Length: 289
Length: 123
Image (cartoon, rainbow over all chains, first blue to last red; front, side, top):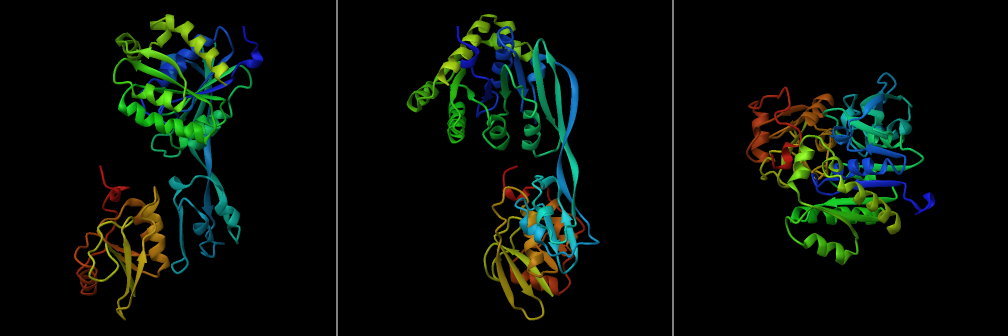
């Protein structure tokens, strides 16, 4: 029996390719561990959080999240254009000759550089709401998710706001979005281990390679779960062996798993044998770290 | 006055580039002296905000009007917001476009004529 000191606390679940089974694994892992540890499930796929469909939380708190965007006081503005020049996101355009200053809120990343550099100090910041953080409970699992407003392009600031609610004790499972770009990096950053869920197909392998490179660049230990094992080919296995990335678990292709998912039933409710397997997965991860 | 024409090449015989935000070059011509300046469009490869960047660039070059093919929503807002006139649907060579402008054949556009990221290809 391992002491609590040896156990990993924060685990991210990412994938590369979408639809490989991140949320299937993350939610069932949460359900399996809740009898053994205090568990928090954190859904950082803020563009389309879906953990709530399987865990069915009751929400207790909704917190709006915004980013600071500039308002230029044109009565004091000299149209020098320094704000526009300093904006790496090109969210401001200024013309000295026609005395015009335009702000593009949707491109603004809320970095605050424009108001900082303005020689007249005439740029104020107002908050633009981008989404909400929701907190609740699901069958003894602490639950947090972010929901980005429809039409909003900027996920990372909301993901950072969600991560502020990460528990300081127990096990935290951070469910990331698919891919390897900014939102995934933000979700995965700061965690002690990253589970990469993949499928044994050329598509799965292509995106797994990117995800492995991402974890290496972030120096986060990782392990792979091969979902839908049995369909496709052996290239993912060969890649993991060559790259010395451990394969932690294989979930054989089983129509029953897909049927359960399609009606919002977690994996370990449909196939209870996975409960033990997932607890052992968590213990294996602790050893790898 | 100075007008900017989006171009696929760096001279007056080049074809008008149908994209504004992601065109290859802007040819900025002084309609009175016929002198021209070639400005490379550094916004062409930007992930986002290309139209805004390009609009800022041509405004900085002193252009009062833009002749081009297509203009997206952010680009249009930048150009009209900064006080430039926009003519979309312009075809032919840069030289021919300027002649059309000088003869009064081109109409100002009142709005963008394509959606965002139109010039990036694909759907």
